[in-house]
Image (tube, rainbow, N blue to C red):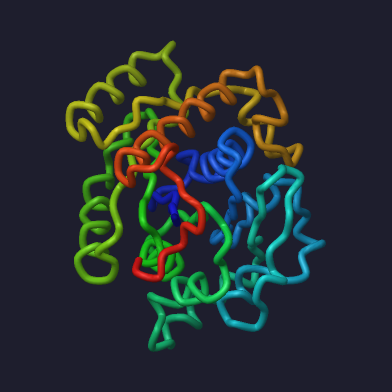
Length: 270
């Protein structure tokens, strides 16, 4: 099972979701999880306590077949591994454009090398460039985080149309796992209004779980820790525990497994 966390807009809680969903799948659901940091900013990498200066190999080397499993780093979280990013990934956007297999590079490498993980979570860049397309072509499902603010719907319909095009032309296995409302501050009227509008427009595509705006959740990355380890009693940690249970339940309905996420979850057909 490969799940991309994707939105072409930045600042919507994409990396926070990737890090904390991966952590809770590993800790709460006892899955062997790989987090792939596809963003050259490498925030998911640093958010799990991996210092950029200590990285010997990155996802850039992995994509170019210069290195295989040696690029995978074990994190402080039991059962959670990361394929870290680095600034060199910026060059991959240009280099992949010249390749005949430019949309399928990550899918091919994942099928060759990344067996043995129950779940792979991909943190994508805040754009619809070739790296994001690579992630979506390799994925079974996509989670779309959107912020509970005035411009939340701006561009979302276009983005969902783009996902449909990728499904039609490049990856028929791709489906939306859910739209995730993030950074909700229910002290403001706008948060209530945005949630109401999104739920009315997209109905069952929207997760029941909403990620609340939370100081402890915002602090955790600066300590290189997921929220479940930084402050398990915080509202942010409770939100992500709820999300991971909902994700597992949805996948259970789809795949008919006890918790929705089976062993050996990388399919050569997707």
